[in-house]
Figure 1: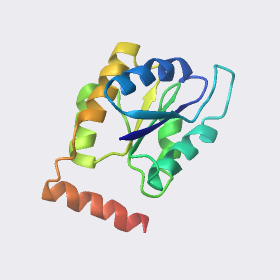
Figure 2: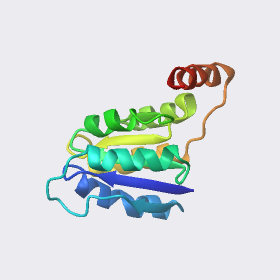
Figure 3: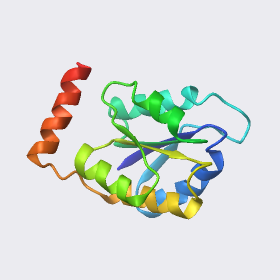
Length: 146
């Protein structure tokens, strides 16, 4: 599975810690930036990652900024994206099982590195439950987007 990842300067350090974790799980990762901790605008990173997931070039995407809020707002503006801002493993598991989220947002200044690694591992390895009620709810989201 191909994973797109990107961050602004506030999420750069955490993103760099997460890439080896994702690769160790057996996923192919492409970094959409930013290349260092110099200030950048989070929409300039979040939109391209979300578009790459929405158009099918990547199965899932991960975006990181200082709080995770800005990148999640941007990602969710892109049709077809269901981006979840997670702060613990339970949220990561449930957003995959119930919402079939295709993007994960994290706050580099909010969650610690070890917790973020656990969140990412859980999110990447949890499958969508495909229960009738969940499929129906996602269908409503997709109908609204159309």
